[in-house]
Length: 174
Image (cartoon, rainbow, N blue to C red):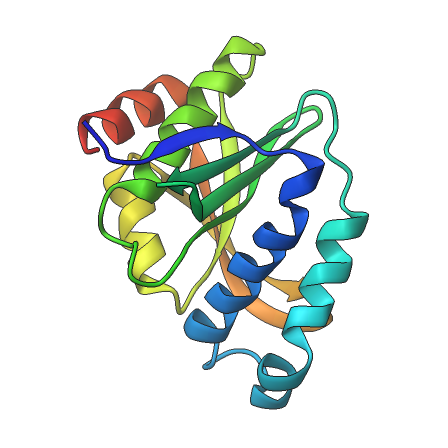
């Protein structure tokens, strides 16, 4: 049984989401984003981004917490298709099943809304995340450049054609 909980994010979580997101980019994306941007601008850019990002009625935005402290989040935007836009876990909390649990719960909530598939993009140099998504049944659906706050970065599209697989495999590994 995990020693953390997962719950729906609220508007009150926006600042902590921004902080987790900024710290994750500072750690993970030094090879693809300018250091000046990561050192001086990322916190403000993420704060603005998350204050302006609408949480739609069908969107799935989740927080993982341990002893009342936010340790990770996942954000999925739901239109015609489900798009997992963010999955970030605090440094020191990774490899403990938090990301898997967030993805499993995301898949369950998406299926409850009638979604059967989901996509995400992962920075191609993020080998750790790419390995996780592959282990959870995600399949490569091609490569493309995508902007990250104004910076074009190579990405791989990962697709789960059947969210049942993601919910089961991710749950089995937490």
